[in-house]
Image (cartoon, rainbow, N blue to C red; front, side, top):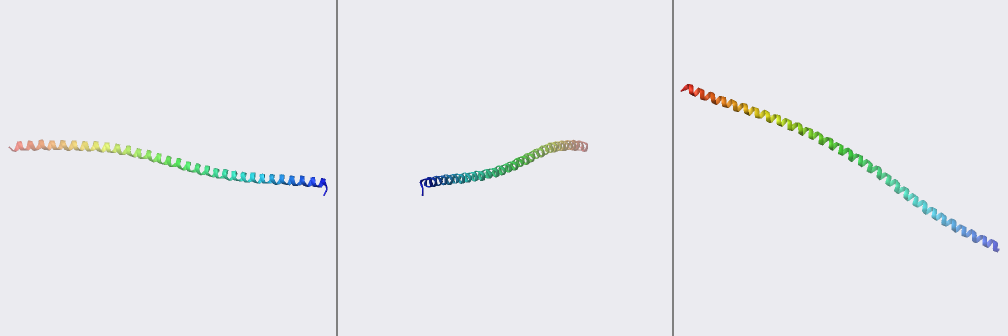
Length: 115
């Protein structure tokens, strides 16, 4: 082997080591890129899941708020009905007391006539 071919072989061997190192670096970079891509996809999936859960929670809050308003309306109607029934009861009791007073007066008048 001549000196030129020996030098050439050394240069080829060095270039092969450089190429091999570059391939290893490229493989590591590709593996890191794939890991980051997988993490990004997983993060995107989590974002979609969280957005879906948020929409469901907002819908649940809206349903509960609507139900609360309905219950408040029902309670207001019930209070009004109760006030009306209370007034009716007071009127009835007042009428009954008036009838009792009239009956008592009539009873006294009849007793006076009988004596």
